[in-house]
Length: 479
Image 1 (tube, rainbow, N blue to C red):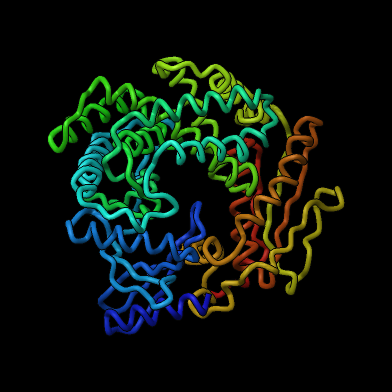
Image 2: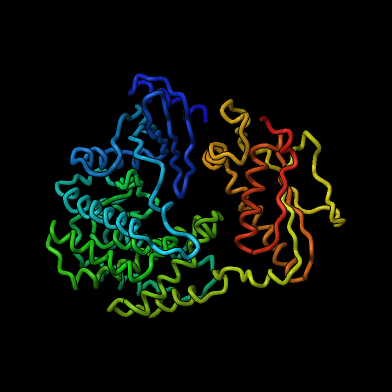
């Protein structure tokens, strides 16, 4: 942490002529880039470290172009000589994704307004921003063409389909991939394609959307980014609102370029399909293989969207093996959420706790079972080593963000869940009444507390079991 933060702090002080007073790590999502919010008395900026110099060069080139056109992307302040560290404008901390409704709540008027405003800015960025655009710095490819789409198809096949063990005819599937990508390649592709235009990459500040993370952009069609946003899996936008937003986008885009609406919509739903193929590949790598929880949670939503496409807006070309495989995945029990109603009639109580190895060691099991799972968090990067976090705990947002950005705690927890999930399901099936899961660290204040909180929350959400959460060292935490 020190090396990266020091380099970014030096850039900040060089650019703003003010000393950095606060650095907050921003939790990562699906990439290896690391982000920090750096602040001084009068200034704030987002510091970034990216280990892929070619990808960074694409981002620098694109951002300078968009900044010159005054488009809604953060300004690029300063780039380090190594081209791996850079500072950009801090346009806010809240993404459009964080504004999405939860637990079945409806899309309100303000949210629809924000989506429409985002689509207005998207159309302008794609069409006007795409004029006289230099794609020579694009990485890994300058155009979203048939080759790019075939890469995505193979990404899906090797990282999602194969790990699920759903049987398929490889030759027939490859023929369908070729058929689909050939069909899509016929659509006009003279625009800037963002590539990952989804609500996590839209920052909302005072009802104004700003776009981030477009370094994978290239020349392509208009429909792909629209499909990425409106069919984003976890966003779960109602179909009626999707149609309203699709029509709104077309009404905006046709003021900037010629749009043949029937043809646009025909290709649009086929691009929704290829986008989902790419997304499932990402969910396979990040979820099924790397065991990152929020990617796993998105899989059922993506498969539900695919079912809808084939039932309501199926492409006009024949894709028999691809359709069969995708619908088999959608019907597979391996992606169905656990039936929590089965837990309601059970007596299982899961005790989850944090503790300190130094202040008392592994907690005894009061149930009489002789113990449960004890996980050692001490190998994880310790925020307690740094002054800003010494009086905070794993309940505090800065500590949580540090752990998620500067340690492998989320990967560690996924490994723990893989073990404990099997036990919980087995105990429910056998009608056991008690299970204990404990996390220990040096002081019982940061890493173990975060781990216990995350585990308790997950058990309640996934299984609906009764959970008792304890932090044994709470009374010794600094005031």
